[in-house]
Amino acid sequence: MNGNDLFDDAHVVRYVKPTSRHEDGSVDGSAFRLRSGDNGLSVNWLEYFRDLTKAQQLDEVRRLSRLTMRRRGCLAELGVGATKQYSPELTALRFVHKPLASANGYEADPSHSEITGLPQGDSPQAALIGDLIAECIQAIHPAIVDS
Image (tube, rainbow, N blue to C red; front, side):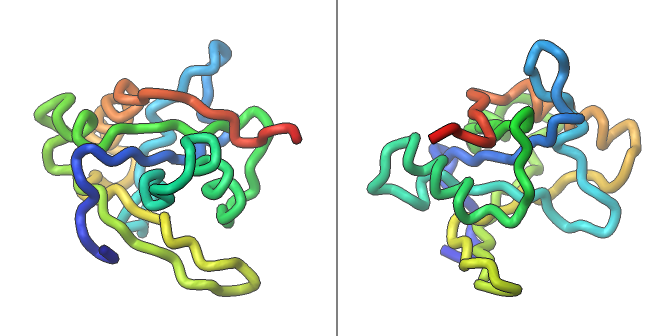
């Protein structure tokens, strides 16, 4: 399915760093802004791991992540269809399956995907889209789980 759009009933998670969380634990829209030069926002497709429970899917995402996750960070979960249908400003978003090959000592990440169709940089439009996506978060999961 590499390069194909995820189905509307799919769910993705995005790592949110501690500085993009409010004191009440909610996620700031800045977590969903595209950095200059990037074409898409990295997320992980949970249902790629279809034979696993939600907890196991999240564990796989954590295990395969190439990011340094922090204790106060989180994994913000979005429903693909619900996000695109939330507001007219979000209908142009695409959730695209873009697996990562193994590289630089990292294992391949077959669940890696991207949100495309986002405005670049720190424009008012980018802030609005980021805030709207943040309003679509269905669940917040810990980035680090104690064993």
